[in-house]
Image 1 (spheres, each protein chain N blue to C red):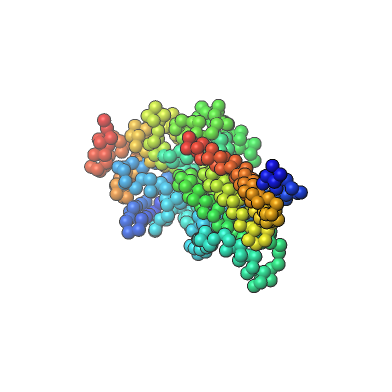
Image 2: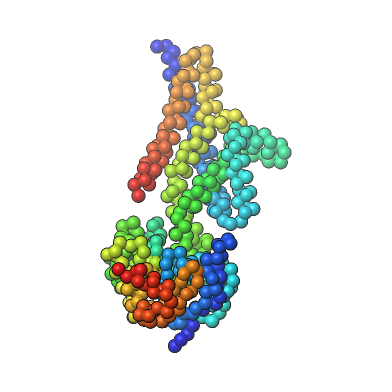
Length: 226
Length: 246
């Protein structure tokens, strides 16, 4: 067993480098989710209001980010923005920007749907107590919407984490990119290394995403009971 | 005596082309209990909902304590603190405990100190025999309990008038009595000014100072309570009463 492929994972600092790549992917995903959820909540609230112009603009925004493939968004922020507008930021931050705008778009639709599915009676009994529109949102509609939107939000999070695999296309050293380098560097000495490297990446993504997916399923089942 | 709380003059309301309320006029004096009676679809609920701005109206005026209401969102929001309303569907907020349901509006809208409102809330809960449910969530309560708490929640705002929109219509029969007793007590003990939409004729006969009998969005008859049930003026009201009599 001189050169069993699996040993490529433990040559030098390979394993640590792969974990480092995973960390890059995770923090970009996490930060994008935090910003995106905040922005998406605001957009979602605005989309339940009566102003048609705001609703129309936000609908266009949603459709744009829903239709355009994420990889195109990444190219847009990585190649076009810096050149056209002279914005020079590290690739990781541009990735956070693209992912945030995408998450905000998707989440605004989740929030809007959840708020609209709170029964009309709830809205009326809040108004009848003299609550202002904002107080109604803050104390009555949002807390109830939150429960409804939680499973969809977790699913969105798992999608964001998976989509970080595209980060290599804008030269971010995420786990895929690191893996690719290891495979190429060790192709001669470990011909089967590619199997082990991608196998490990598969397991790493699985470890991050699977608990979220189980959590979402659990919450959905619990909501059906009530 | 005889302070006018609400006065409605020549009120018309449309849903699209369809006219839901025709030339409604009546007044409500302090301490008075008015019940709105009439067949389903006669406009009772529409009328009572118009009185706290949940339904807009086309023309006519509603005056509160002698002041004609300018029906902006902001004005209605302020007025609703004085015009309490309880609905058929007893919508407590499911994300809040009984106590927090009651405290929400007085502390957030009226900015009253939490401790003071809490003390009052506990007294009110005591009155409706639900003091032991103060920390429960609405899903743990029966329909009748929820409706009694919805009444307490409205009372905690110290409203000048209470509107009751078919508050017992979706309750199990054995729950109805408890709720009606509370409303009766509000009238007898607190002299609360109230407008009540109900299908409980015996209750209406006991509590109404004045009956408005509606059909097809019109007030057919406006009669003192005792007289309405003994000698309704219109044939239509007579038919209605005998149809409810089993």
